[in-house]
Image (tube, rainbow, N blue to C red):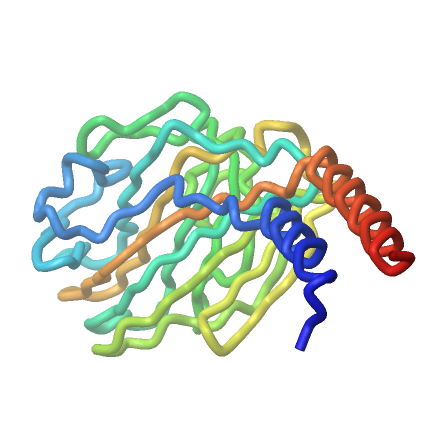
Length: 277
């Protein structure tokens, strides 16, 4: 049993720890696709001019399909924006997805991206946007498909399409998304560092971590767009997404640690005073 003389100081310390713990994580973007309307709150639009695209949103699933082979298919959505302003700030992009169909000689070539659209926001299907975007792409591919974590350099980029534009490889060898009837969750976490960005990719069983220490400018620390899609080599392929969210976790301000230090000093003083009594 804890003596009563320690209860108040310990409770003060506990409250101080809670105050500076990284419990301020907030969801800055999310969609569970429950409203059966992909064009509002938030809106999802196709990028470029894909042919023979089939898009359906109902019963909590957004399905992106294609009936024409040998072309890319992408969807994008955006929010007001989140900046990783301090070293240690973190952004985690997660979505739950499954792939059905036959990818031919490009199995599992799925891409998803998160970045800064630099003002080119899609407002309808088949718009040629993201020509000056910045961000990161996770490409899951095997057998000739692109694979790895890439930085979209923002000169002729296509956020989400790893096979074109001005991209820099940050890491290679991500596991592919299997043709399956089971949903799987993927997460790409970005953490600002003193020299750039730390990236961590996981599919629940595999973890790939890498540091990008060559971030060109501050545009790469602001995020307002997410994309996902795939490269189709055959017909009747569908990418089904059941949920998606982006979570921002800022590092506690130095003033918060200073407050905790001051609280610890006060507790130590109170303990010494009570022990003398």
